[in-house]
Image 1 (tube, helix red, strand yellow):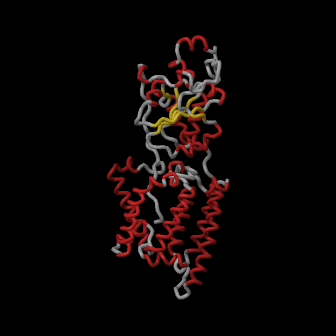
Image 2 (spheres, rainbow, N blue to C red):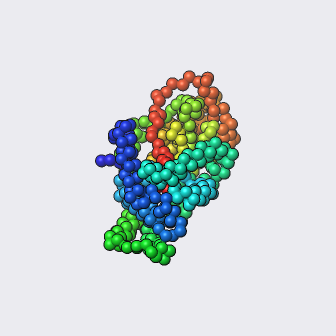
Image 3 (cartoon, rainbow, N blue to C red):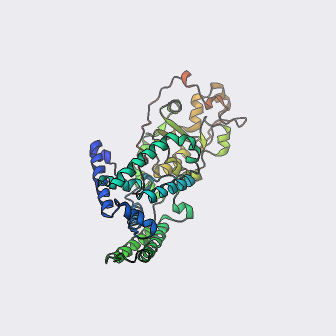
Length: 410
């Protein structure tokens, strides 16, 4: 059984996946051209409320895709966490949308539809595409002057359910109902602004709208999988990795990782704040177990060469955190073998280990006593990589991460 999204490169190979992309692209362009998206006059008419075809086609596509995506995630055949959702840069996005909208009104095309017009040989589209290319070059050459604003107001993977603190199913249903009301209103406005045009309502529209509402109601009824549901779906394979100790990396490998310029280690310390303040590995960030799900959203946007390492006093709490994050489809996720206790047992000097060892700490407690909260100011926090003979069985294997795709209005 396939798991979605489909790994096209693995299924069809490098060139086979490109063939799939070509078929999808040609089909997408054909639909856009059939809907009139290659005609600048038709596109510009939407801004005068005389021809709302663009609005109706685009939002119908968005609504149908939304319902099908969350229906698929609700029944467990699609992992929503593996779908790239662009991060929200609020004010840069608003300013960029405003600039693009002005260009759309003036030129009659957006970047995507201009390519459709170009493919069908329209002269105005050719000039528009030329302007787009010049704009891309100008942006690339000048973005350094306003990069602070360009990267500001970053809300991460921020969607309407987070904004309104509502479930995905409820949000989907409300959006469908409101959108259909807007479609009805759009028909009335279009007829008023352009009375000379023929406005015929296709017979299939009413049953199609009813079917969309039924599907949205089903999405709301089914709901979305919880973290526990996601773990249950991968438990057999994931638990085998834990049991086989495929993802527990030794202190030596972690030290080597932190000194590897080709990789980006992210050390997540999931212990209590008291233990963290007593001692932690240099560069490790304290992460409350209650914040794991929120943190997982930000982790999705890390670079492809990022390796996450969970750190506890031993492995108990780190393993619990690993299960939660693994269920959220976080790739390149590992556990420090033996936790901080093993790290100190490996890199702390012999006098410290013999004088400060606590007998039978257990229960994921710190095995060594510190007279003061030293944090990362203790020598073992950052051992000298060049002076240590590192021998370990390498376990880190980079997994494929989800990545941004090109976007646009069509």
